[in-house]
Length: 300
Image (cartoon, one colour):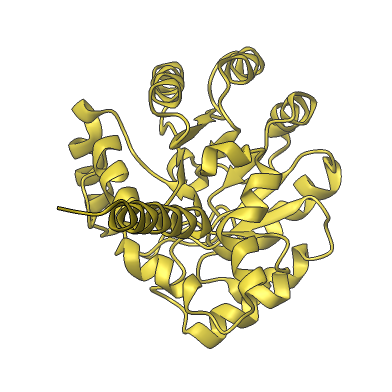
């Protein structure tokens, strides 16, 4: 039979262990992945097959929200931002409706960017709907949508996005499989950035997939940001560090390009960089929280 003193010691130890475990949980740094892909369950498999045929890529994981959440759980990622894009005008509204529904259902773990197609009717009206539905911005995929970012026909879209404070995330650079033409080299963003200084522009793949030697053309603009998606399979740790230093630690956000690459490898590529812990925190969550207005409470 336990004495009062022994019972008190057991109670104290339980409380101490609980506090210590809770403290460790709180101290676990949050992670925001600003560049993931997922599609409605009924089309995800067809999308994967189409991308395999066109670009020679195959997913490491199913391209679904359920699969994404499982991977995030296994890697302690706090927030994933799905980058939706429509490869034809008739799919824009359907995909934006789906993104809004997913955002509501899965928040605060999942947010979504909406999509606009350059050839659609009434893009201004759809941008207003995107903002009203609470989508975080607009994703453009120049290869799939077949346009150059600096085509004048898109300027009214950019103007409206700046008015609505909707950031733009662009695929930038080439593809894993050679394509011709390359629609979005780094220099194709110069006129966009200079003409719309109030528009926050995020360039995926550190500003230009496999075109990192051309980045100096856009470095002086204050409204350009970058994500790291699809870079750890291409770049050594030292080269990745050098490019991020060139771009600036306050402008780079972590992105994985889920489901196309080994998720843990993409994440570890950032965690293992020979940079300070504060610089890692900026890349892994602080910059995204500030630039995309992800509330800190969502990261708990």
